[in-house]
Length: 360
Image (cartoon, rainbow, N blue to C red; front, side, top):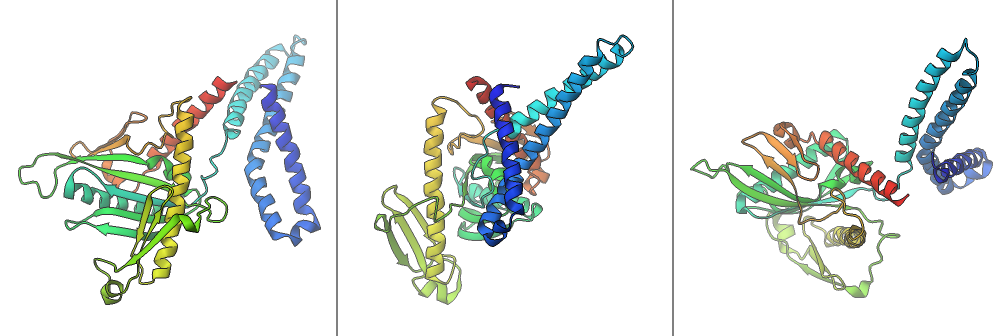
């Protein structure tokens, strides 16, 4: 193990002891915000420290076995223990290296999921509806809650654009690699000749911004327009100026929200989406700078990139970033995305480890 890594682990072990003393003190009970912050920090570093203790025990066992080598009667047993301890040490060191990788600060956040129809006309809008159902079913499997924020239905079914808010532990960490171009190949229901058509949608996964700490929006840099809602919604929605359009003058980002009867609620929702989009733009600009020195296939966040193809005649889903093809399209479209999300996360982790090795 590198000295710098060993020093970091010792520092975390000392910090865990400090936290435990702090949580046991009377002062911690008086300040609940501090108590929660310390508890959260403890939950993050305890697994690392426990694994470090296992590593130290394995090192001690290895040292003990090496001392036995000088005894002819114990040599065979000692060699066996040295081999076993060496294997454990190697595995534990790899685990510790993964545990020390920098954590994405957005991983625990809720998300805004935006799906937009692209090339393919009505079939693209229908596919946007299929993707929305897929992600909603995935959210149900994880017991997350979903909230429709904005929708622009298509005449033939599906959506030209739809935005949902997904609330749940680790929502962003699970779905952050879904951003990009999703392509579908199938025979549309409206196709009389039985020909396979190719259509596409764009998916954007935005971590919900902390309005207070993450994004400062200058009131002088936004223009708010109100207008009457269009589409279904009843007389009240359509006859009052409840719809809201917010334009961020500095970036040109435009957000519209018209799903609620209340103008105030629509404005509040639109401001949250605006904050998330500004934060996302800042994040992607930072990623673009990093990409000039390190090309990442998984975490590039490039929305123009075609990331996945759903081929219905062949029953397959192919993720082009990691060359993974799964022949279980029905299960995936029903929200069974775990294998995809886990393989993408593992590949991203491998990239981080490789970058860490290059930097060392």
